[in-house]
Image (cartoon, rainbow, N blue to C red; front, side, top):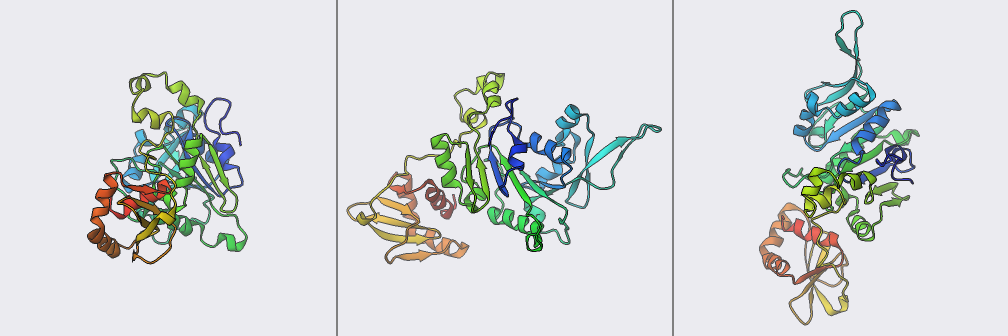
Length: 346
């Protein structure tokens, strides 16, 4: 698929018109992700759900200055406004000016619904039967933001709640479009979908598109955006030329990814030490080095990823964290490094 339009922005229509149900775009700032998606749904009269991670982020949207349609209203001469539907749910409404009174009036029915992932599970009686597309904007949290408990599962549960049994009735599933900047490769959604290793390899190989037909997933990591190249000559990005912010915003690099501990090893030289969650830690037979993989063999102490078992794991293997910090723990894949940190509560 052609990833960029002739004007240099991302080809969002191409993404939304592809054959894949689940589409994830992790791209640089200002490359047209949200703009293109919101423009597409309105021009094509598609009923959609628009989400951000938290209720606080959603509440901001009702303020005109944070209206996601603000720039589009100006560019397209639209007047899309945000108004409450319920206590924690809002809607995008077309607003029209009355010729006689000069006052603006909103449509009675919203063409898009706005809800937060963090609070959707508490909503009762929500009917999403007419929703055809779910746009999850800014799905990767910034470092200052608080995590959502079981965030990956919360996203999938929200999709299930909206999609329900429509496929059993012969209807197409809700299309899913998740978009974010490259803050964290090990984010809950990509961990849950098993895409962390895929994304790591894509970044390493400068690959921009990945497709999994069996699972109906398309992952996009734009790394040669013409818009990002143009933005490099603007004031902020000249100022931050050598910073991690610049690498994230323009080069679309996951700046916190450290692959120095990722390598291959002969498991025959190791013996299983402990199994926790999805990973097994092996200890070298001739020294104090350790290797982490998802391969399970032999007998060893085993812990689940449940809260109580993780407390037991921490109590018995806190010294393993020190070994990791001292560079004596290696990993078959970057995902396993992420999981070990997660199990240690980091």
